[in-house]
Length: 249
Ligand code: SIN
Image 1 (tube, helix red, strand yellow):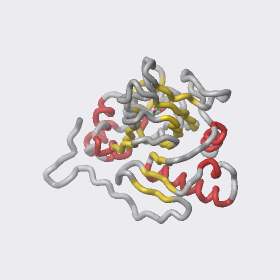
Image 2 (cartoon, helix red, strand yellow):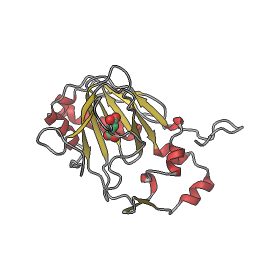
Image 3 (cartoon, helix red, strand yellow):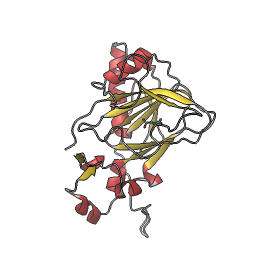
Image 4 (tube, protein in one colour):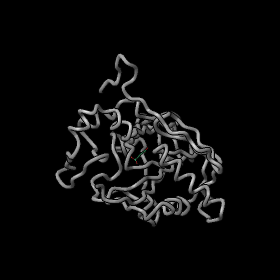
């Protein structure tokens, strides 16, 4: 892991701009760099389209852009409301391989128990980064939590990039990365290798401790995430809705 310490104070100085207050939601930052918990929203009601919902939608969008991942607790939503919330942000992505729950293939199943051979998302990654057009964001609803553990970690790729030395930025400028020999990426989408080691610095991260019926919504273009499978033999279960993105430039 790279050290960002120097004799002149921290080499990475995160400075957020002056923040406008929010009017229709509460926004409590988890760290100055990434993650915020949102309060004052009932997502089940929000997907019905009244005027207040539109104002809240705008502010949720803004909170996502400012914090890269946002969290909602105590949400009691149906699969249809989960899908409808995702559709507010764009067309839904269908995972090419993962199982889904119920009839709609856009409702991806997230599940691990004592008999599971693996759990979703155990290494640092962005979702479906092998797609030519990787998703813009993912909305994960966890209904059943283990008694302890099962946290998800998120890391800001803006912070990881900004903290590089000018020399390293110049070196990286224009380089591309090959994804499993198939698709070419560049910029913030680089998903593995040296970039990963640097991105693992906890300075760029937040860690979300789930409670039942909580939701995490992350911007898949600029945040990586990693799910902890430290709760075996307990069960963790939920669903994920993923919003389509664009081809990276
Ligand atoms: C995922 O990578 O979407 C799974 C994240 C999680 O289960 O916390």
